[in-house]
Image (cartoon, rainbow, N blue to C red):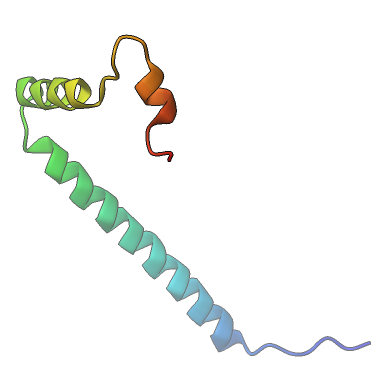
Length: 70
């Protein structure tokens, strides 16, 4: 039984597409990292505490169990 012959240039294109995907992923990750580096640690801490205070459930916790369900 003979296997179909795949031309070599197609494997080169697959390899180049893979490299382009890796490079694009690295660029996206680097962009997100730079956005976080703009804030100083105290400012980030303050923002996180503010967000935590907004989502903290009531003392009995019943609202957290039923949030988003009707």
